[in-house]
Image 1 (tube, rainbow, N blue to C red):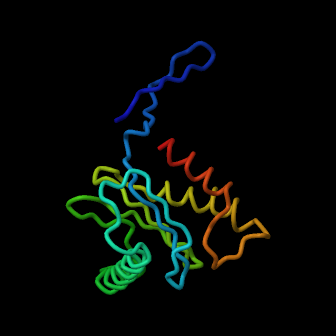
Image 2 (cartoon, rainbow, N blue to C red):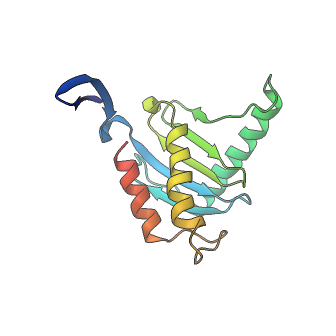
Length: 160
């Protein structure tokens, strides 16, 4: 759902700006994987069905799926450097962003979520880098447990 928001400047009303409300994008889960396939971070918000079986197994399946899909897309792409950023099923959409260092961000959302590339780029550059990469206490291949990261990520995703 979009809610119009108007800006005024020096007493003049400018055109409405459409801003998203939280109900606009339903986010189910988020995964962050390192380049080796280890799940560094996982969070559920509004997941419709609980995890079936072992959560570790689900992480491995997700990474394997993304790895295979990336390989398929790179081989099938008519243009060099073609990649993928989203994959939809009949029930949900996986939104994908991979950094140059191989860190993979995956948001599982409702089907109507639209293009989430900028959201994932923002999470990487403004939250991941600022809270973790610049933190001398964080070790790159260990699970993310930094409270500041979790808080900023949650606050950001609550606002989209």
